[in-house]
Amino acid sequence: MTSVADTGGAQQSASPGSGFEVAFAGFGGQAAVQRWVDAAVTVAFEELEPVSAFPVVPGRRWGPGLWWSATTGRHVACGSNAMRAQLMVLDRDPDVVGLAGRPLRLHWHDEQGRARSWTPQLFARRADGTALLADCPSHPSAGGERALAAAVMMERACEQVGWRYLRLEPLDELLAANLRWLAGYRHPRNQVRPALTAAVLEAFAFPRSLIEGVEAVGDPIEVLPAAFHALWHGYLHVPLDKPLHERVLVQAGALPSSEALTTAGAHRDAGGGRFREVP
Image (cartoon, rainbow, N blue to C red; front, side, top):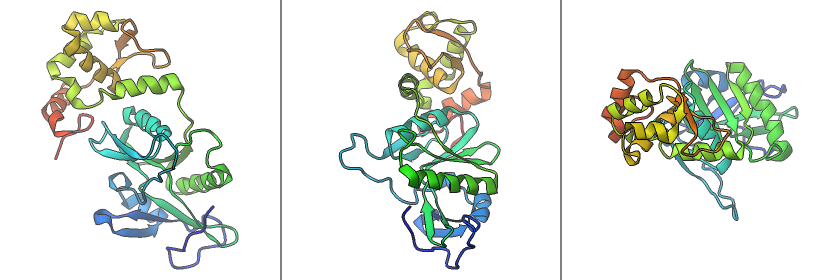
């Protein structure tokens, strides 16, 4: 792992990871460094810009970009196809309330006292205030020994503050394809209007094929976006390990409250997130 300058100033303990520090881009873009155990409880990492840009790899067909999050109503920096796939999964997770790409860099010293660092690709804030730090390798051995050694230290750092670190396994190709399709309808504008969404949910109160339920509501051109939006948010359910098609069996999922539907309809043009009020 590449050595870095000791941004913390004082020499750390010889015990690896005993004095973790974290660097991040504070509000206004000012670089900041704090003790890890302090920053974990005071810094809203989900609100921050990347501490450094995702690298551009020559010859790779897909480079860094942005993912619009239905959870937050904002863009999340994204570095690879593998990371985008994991963002799709987390963006649908009702327990996730915040997302950010590369918002922090962790610093520590190894057994020889050499400064080390690692920048996890993904940060997800949970509803209970804890967080997930994750890397999104395209295959299990991606990053080699350096990444695996850093994963050990990331796990240790997260244990100190009650968080979790994971190297997320690549998604099954069919699951990823289905999520990509539904993600195209994640924006609140695809709800069209609360009354239409309510009619769609009522049409699938008992299991039936997608096209049958949609045609029972009205013109498929208008109704399908609302149905796909409901499927993205889990208000309707289909098996995502099987191909999506017009005859796929759709059934009821977790229903939104009437207040949630009204709020989303009122703010969909403002770019609000998952039924979240816009300031």
